[in-house]
Length: 203
Image (cartoon, rainbow, N blue to C red; front, side, top):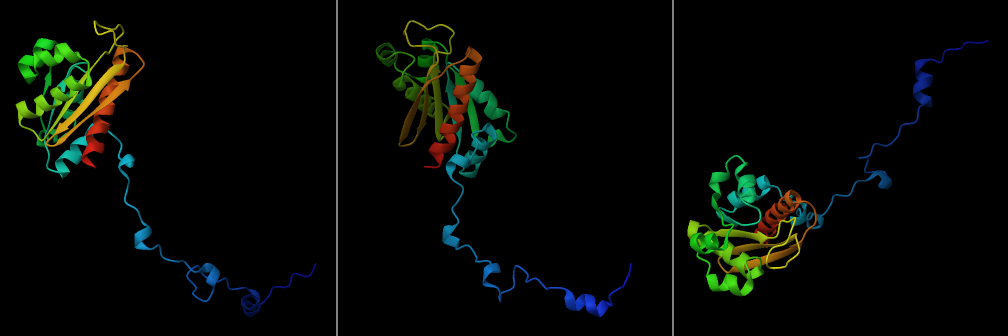
C-alpha cells in the first residue's frame, strides 16, 4: 500500500470554506432582527397565581389587602403571610364563620344574610367590602361556601363557593362548583382567590 502524505499546502487548497451565519454575502444565512413591535409583553395568564406572586404584585402597585374568610377558615390569610415581606401589603384577616361573626366583625347587615343566604354572591361581596373598610386597606377578599362533605340548610351542593374582590369602584365575584374532599375544596378556593387578586389588579 502506498501511504502518501499530502503536504500542508495541498490540504489547505482542497478544503472548502463554509460561510458563517453572519456572512452578509449569503442571503440564506442572513439573520433578520425582530421588530420591537412584534415582541409582546408577558400576558397576565403567564403569572402563576401563587401567594408570593400576589404579594409581589400588591407591593409593586403599592396596594394593601385584607381578607374575610368563612369556608376557607383563614387558609388564604395563612398562605399570604407565608410569604416573606407580606406585611408590606397584607394588613390582616377575619375568619367570620358564623352569621353572627359576619355581622359583628364585618358589619354585614343581618337582613342581607337572611334574604340572600350566608353562601351567596351578595354576602361574599359584603364580606370583601367589610374587610377592606374595617382594616383600612385598598382591597378586600371575601370567601364563603360549602366545603362539604355535607350541605347546610341552604341546600347548596358541597363545592359551591363564592369568592369576591372589592376595591374602590370595583366589586367582582367568582362562583365556583368544585369537587373533592373538604380540604381539596378549601385549597382550590384559595387558589382561585389568588388568581382573582392577580388578574383583577392587571385589568
